[in-house]
Amino acid sequence: MRFLVKVCMPVEKFNAAVLDGTANQKLKTALEAMKPEAAYFYEEHGQRTGLIVVDFDKASQIPAIAEPWFLSFDAAVHIRPCMTPDDLAAGGLDQIGKMYR
Image (cartoon, rainbow, N blue to C red; front, side):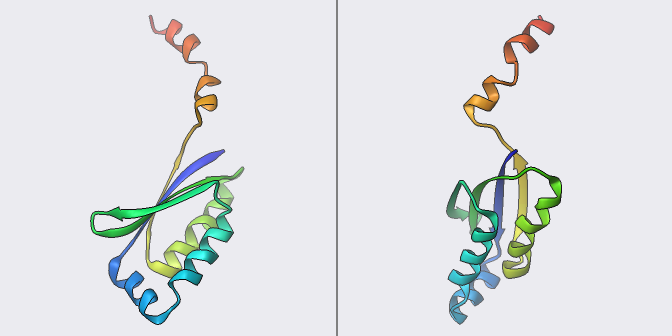
């Protein structure tokens, strides 16, 4: 199942990693563990933020996805299921619509 993971990293903790030279390695390690389909980084509410698309099969995989961000950056991590257009089309919207006419 595909998930959208949003990580919001507090400025102070991330700045400390930048200044001590560990930010890039910590980001690389976290991303390698996730094996993302896509990852984008931007600013949101004054914090460095990432939107990362991952695909995993079991809820038991969530700690491996979230913990590197918690431990490395004190990040807030939000995990939401998401769909591709094909997933949405396979969801049976037409049949559901007929049930609620």
